[in-house]
Length: 358
View (cartoon, rainbow, N blue to C red):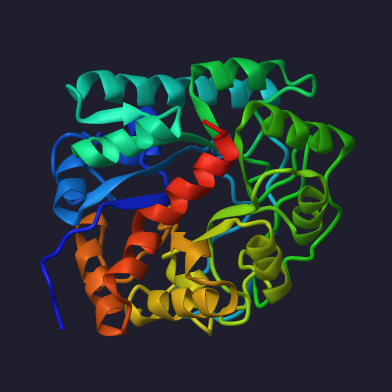
């Protein structure tokens, strides 16, 4: 069974901003012209039915390896552990964060109405209905936030609506998981006192708290404090792929109990049972994780969290233009249009409405 029917696809995570505010990373890519570089540009978004998502501000380490103390494993390696990078200097983190935000706002201005930075769910639903790319400004790690949370207030007023407490490194607030396979996400201490205050500050302002990259104790500390749904924007099922970056069954159950959402990561190393970073990985691996999470916690709690421009995609998918292939794989697997609407956008809209409260 195949179909040309298009559903708007709202995605939990992409790293395209790195190619805009860090030209060295993006090799001079233009967001508005189709290229063979990376996974995302506006023409390929249109081709793939990509209607919007979380646009991540990620502060790379100021080092030759971009944040990783050691080399990443090649596609043949089935067991690895990459040590946690060093803590970032706050002034450097804030500087890069502001550059990235400026890049996002310049994109919006230069798009002539084709892209909108979203601040409310009414704006989100309106954009989805008008074929405008809906961009939620997201910080992948809280290094740019000060302990008094003054920067949080300022960034919120500027458009920040989603915050990851940690990337895979420690910071003032939380501890990220190292990239390890096989491994448990239970890798160290939980939130600091400042981290607990940050969770409360996000709840007060209505900023979504992203629990991707954080270690398991930090997840449980957040679950015990937060009054918002638990959300993980880009991860997979640990039962299927025992990476430190994936979620245990107990974590999945807590997400369901909070009425939260998991965005399934398309990175091959977080999909495959053997953990290999092998691009020759079928789309059925993404379907397998969606199946498992939907089967355990319900179709209303699973969505897409691609990690485009930040991870290794299955060759069969390729880039954002390949999203219709994934939809057809899900249809062929038995997902009907009601289920696909939930996975592609409705679940994200609902959890943002509950979190933002506007």
